Image 1 (cartoon, rainbow, N blue to C red):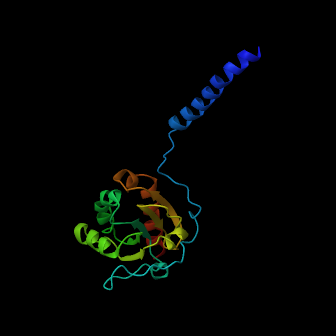
Image 2: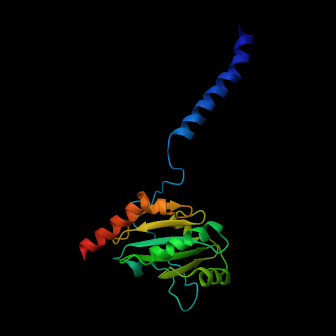
Image 3: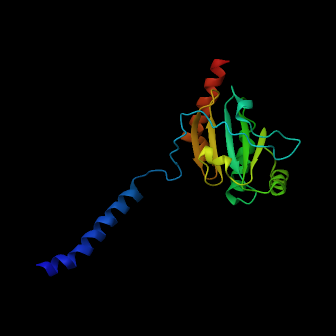
Length: 185
């Protein structure tokens, strides 16, 4: 009897693990949605110096009272190139401010990136060592946040933004922030 139990134990453990794995794969959860402890809280107050003298850096206090997208990007990031045309389109949205945080990048690389693809940002701050972005919960690029006019973080998206994201819950949060700002003005 003990021999049978010892032989069956690995099969039972494997079956249980396979079942848990199967449930997680088929549960329909969006793995690109990363829960953030900052959702519903005021955006961090960390300021980021300007990427270049002719453009403003990112100071959250300067954007109080207006809905905003904060996009964390880098010139070496291939997915950042993929999402960039969409950011260029979003920058045309009336009432929406788009700010950038250049993450763990060289200034000359970031300037070349923006010169080549266009600059959708109203302000671009730099975080060459990635220390200040930690306050935002950033751990990679690209990441994008929706900030309401009252300064609260409404949504976070990890990975390149797509049309599907803008048509989904992330876009819903952005549109809600724009509606609230328009209603209060």
